[in-house]
Length: 372
Image (cartoon, rainbow, N blue to C red; front, side, top):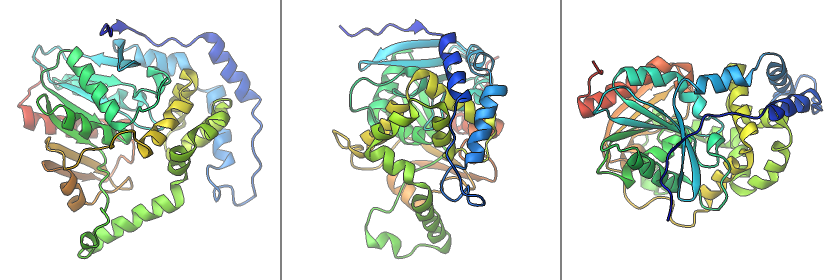
């Protein structure tokens, strides 16, 4: 019989692991660089040196990660054979709608910590799980963990927690998982709120025949991203284990790889997220998620659009969606907001802005009010 037990599970990394990371960082053998061209070939050496310095001199795992996680109850349960770790912050409202928040890569649950209190203050319970194979849920031990399997696990998690009504909120990979949660559990999911909608041309020439200048510019930017920044996706989708051998043995190498998609963010955030992968030994399993998405054992998504009420809150400079393609894939697209600030990690950079957008959307759907 499969256990459905939910147990307290505060994160505690052994001191020996913390010491080992520092020793490895102190012995880092940095790669060479060509003067004046350090940023031409990928993550600059100078940037990695600064991140290593920050980890050694300014970063404190106990203070900067464990203490922040300890602000909220932490639990674990086994779903579909996989350990799932999650934070569960209750609003105090007995009939609260739950919100399951899903991160992506190279982020972690840390990116959402600053929105937990604004959401609970508005009367929503927050469930914040680590994707199987990412961070505190630990490495995956079998094949097949991708978007839809993760979404199915979230449906089961919210059922175990007793939510009759809940919403799915996501960023990055979480923006792929959250719509599938709504698709799989339409009787309980009241809405889906994401910061990206990954809707692309289908290949039908007719879809491109009457693009507006703005839509054409958006497609050009997307093509630029994949042509100049998409190497991570190609490698992780084709040979993740080849890369994992290097990253699993070098925290400096992990910083260099993961930070390529965190340009301009504060080093505290970059280092803390990389440290989550390092100390949980989930570098390889998180990379394999991309392979599983590219090689699904079953169709990655069923045919037809989602029908759950959906909201997009994107930010300029981040992945840009084209509305007509998004409406093709999501039949009930209620809100489409583009903010000037926030970038790819809005929950970290502009937490109050994102929380207000999430609350506004779900208030419209549920007529929820703050707990008295």
